[in-house]
Length: 423
Image 1 (cartoon, rainbow, N blue to C red):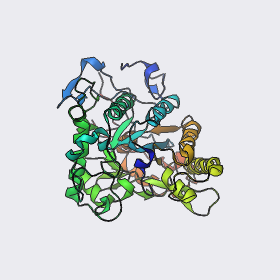
Image 2 (cartoon, rainbow, N blue to C red; image 1 turned 90 degrees about the vertical axis):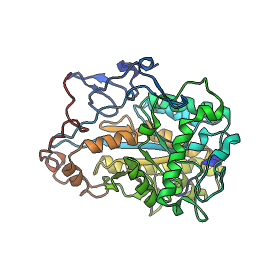
Image 3 (tube, one colour; image 1 turned 135 degrees about the vertical axis):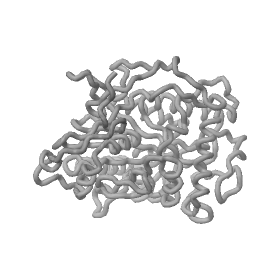
Image 4 (cartoon, rainbow, N blue to C red; image 1 turned 120 degrees about the vertical axis):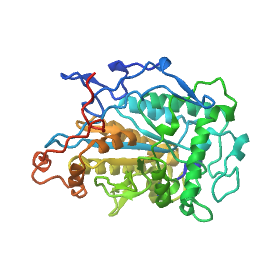
């Protein structure tokens, strides 16, 4: 897989505190604190004691995901945490080793992330005819397929990422954009076919690659997969309808302002956002590709003398957007990127610096979309509705304690945010 294949438009387990990806400490009430703040700790099954192979053994049920904190409902007058989501389109491990790099960066900075896997990265080139894309001939793909080593390397990173508390979503398969059969023209039924195939390639990678003796991915992908971002941010309308039928919980295929999210077709709309673009009067989408297009056009390797400036421009734009929310309405900041080396890798450097700058600040939670959706589902709907009245960068004039002083309704028993059952 090459960097140019990832272009999008506009776009052993332990329960010990030391092993927690988010970093933790024992609070006075016995809870653990970390990237998601004080949380009730879910039990972690010993990995070898709860394994149930699924299908050909490409995936397996191994118990609840480690390091997935239990969300808690905001208390009256409590200032919301500042969520930041870093997400990756077409996640796979190739010679650049950026998947493993950002896994390690996450661990070092009390963060978890979302990795949107392209299903064809689990399918070897010689088996390409197994893919039957809508509106295209079988075996077609605008981002190619993979080889045995690429699949093995990607599986290793997916396995470790999930065990560390990160989310594995989907970026679907062939990445078809634009006219003449692009995803923007697909029907609901075609989207359902594409999603089913993306799942199938993940659930049968051992058979398709011939690596039957390899260790499985440690999750049930039918249950793990709860959200996605469409190629080129196209086709969102019909994708959301299909995803709603399939029980997905969120979509992040749109463009929005930095305001609190709401649901559409039963899914949380966790779209990427517009943030200040240093040196310009207009705002910029929170994605590496968009920064590149507005700096060097579609040329992925522009003027080397400008690489540092361009990277600083992306970093500073994201930081301006972060500060605007952190000091203002506390709306979640959603950032999307690709594992790429455009303009000398300057955008990867920018993401490194943003992660290191923001994820260790007080009240900041660098989380996956799964964790953000869990938290949103745990809140009183009236509280979220009130948060949505705040405009971009707008902090409550009377302060948070007064703004959210009402007593939120208790979460129903068994619902996210409800008190944990006594053991």
